[in-house]
Image (cartoon, rainbow, N blue to C red; front, side, top):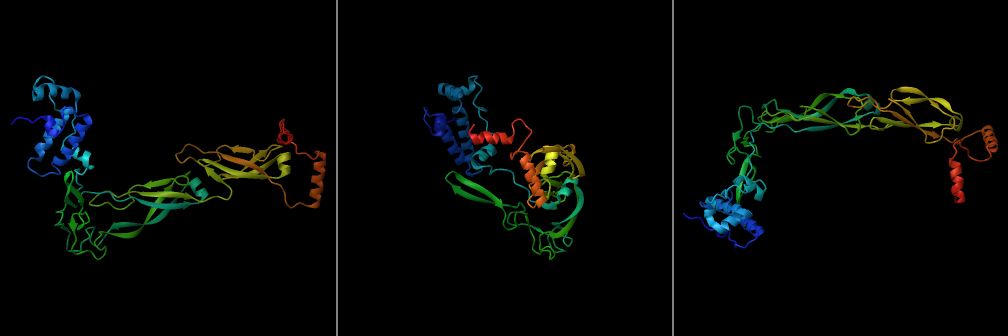
Length: 374
């Protein structure tokens, strides 16, 4: 039987553009794809359209075909096959219908259990130094009465007669593109492929029961707010012999009254009196590792920051400790005695009733320049 003209197969003129040829091919591919068209000659028509498209969509092969017709395949030009391979019917069906021809999932195949999440609240110091603790979580465990089958003891699940154990039902629908086959989970067996006529009284046919489970957790030193710990195999049990899921412990750290934290570094404010800041002093400063002495030089201003190297939080991956940063805040007294007032007035008179700084370009000098508009 002689081949039909490729332009006739696609229903286009010889002067048609590539876009017109592509559009005509897609229309035929939708109409005659064997997965949607069960007519006896649909597969042959689909192959014919595919062959025509592979030729006419290629400039060189189209020119050869226009000159020699079907004989061009025997003229030493390499034929028309393989110029634009779509990988067979399955891939073309995926291209047009979004993967409807994909592989079915076996409902009886082993499946991994679901992951669980637990939020654990820690005190600031607990996150810094780590700890070991037990947590209790509700999780599913295999029913001890039916041993996970969901059926009443002495009975067993039966293969679903509606989906024949596949867990899926196929429905056919006529569309402008042809007959489309839709697959969905079987609603009779909920996609399991099995029906339980007599359910286990303990688990009501579920095959598992909810129980509180105690799990030991090792919290590493330096863990921070929002980080999580994965405990392998402590999630929900798997199905059909599949592995259990994992447990994810999400950390929340309580705020501290004195310290704040950014990464591995710890920050705090150090209140100093006017006399300490002006004359200098040696003060004790709290850190998470204990108290340390800090030498405050004379003339220290509010906002000055000191760094205590290695006094921050340990890195959770073991890369040493961060630092502690101490910001000075000079506190102005609110309740002072008459004698203190007298001394402050005397100091103010000696200082010339002006704020003083030892720096060449002091804050007060900059203030005076701004006030004069300089």
